[in-house]
Image 1 (cartoon, rainbow, N blue to C red):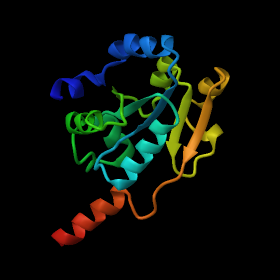
Image 2 (cartoon, rainbow, N blue to C red):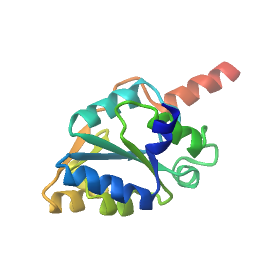
Image 3 (cartoon, helix red, strand yellow):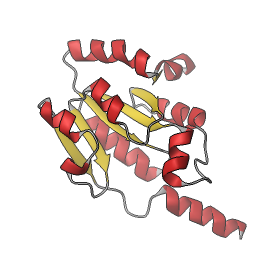
Length: 163
């Protein structure tokens, strides 16, 4: 079981043969990305929805440096080792790939998923990499958030408890 979790964690180089095997088997690859700092019900619901759209779910995970640039100096709360391990331990996630850029554009270009998914109120054309996926004949979807479940609200609640 532990070995399986480690095998789901990939670099840009190691995801290539795994992804190629899935594609040659005719499996539909779904890709999403995010910081996934404090995993909560909203994340789990979203990841399960994303996984249900295809055969394999690859999660692009922002590195610690990337999260700091996007979310501020106090983030991430959990480091990339913890966040990657948590995501890889989920049954609905087939692979986790860490990326250090602010967006997953290079990773999307490498993977060329059949389905690209983001959460929130994004229109498909606003989602980073949508042009690549749509150009390949793929699908881009925006899945809704579960109201009342966000990392920001968790951080605020923890700060109130300290206060």
